Image (cartoon, rainbow, N blue to C red; front, side):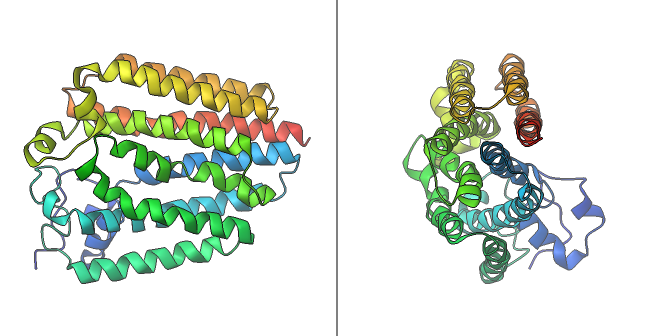
Length: 310
């Protein structure tokens, strides 16, 4: 087995490399705790829906606990999802320069060890989910089907980002499931807006690997859009802002939420203007900046919820 202290090429200089015990490093890398941006992006729709639903219910008493539980759940379930993704992609990852040093293709852990670790993370996620009502529990469990099939989509469709969007936006439904015990039209529109956002930012992310992906036959919207990526982002980011706006209107949101949406939209415009698809480092920075875009919208929704219950 390879040295467990060996670094991963696309994530170096982080706390896992310098502070974590050597034995734990491959597992922390499998769950992406060395680069938590994906967990934050999974969390954002959860927090949006929790805040919007609390505002609609005119009751924020349960919101702090929901925010904390969603935070824990997003980080452990993203870790479980990434572990599953690495298990299914271990042979492909070995053919890509950026990913061949990941724990599985480099031999830092075995497939069996990764499977056990994935189950352990999923059990923590289940413990979080069990704190909610039965409808929310069922809604959360339903997302696992999408998570399970996602890694295979890039082998068969040019649109794997849609499936990623379905998975990463699921939290837009969860806030309503937790607060109301149902999913209504407002939740579904917010979900659709979040999916459009995910398609946009993951297209930017995928531009890091277009050359390697072409060589090994991996499909993505980055390869599909190519030189027309900026126009595609105008479409998908525009749809995201419009659909989230419809959800805010449906939920009778007040001015703080609209201010948050305006800041979110401005950030997306900034990304489109800055984008250079042939600059992988810039693509990664723009992708990561979506955490801030999501937090801007959440801040507006949280302020709106507080105002509506004052």
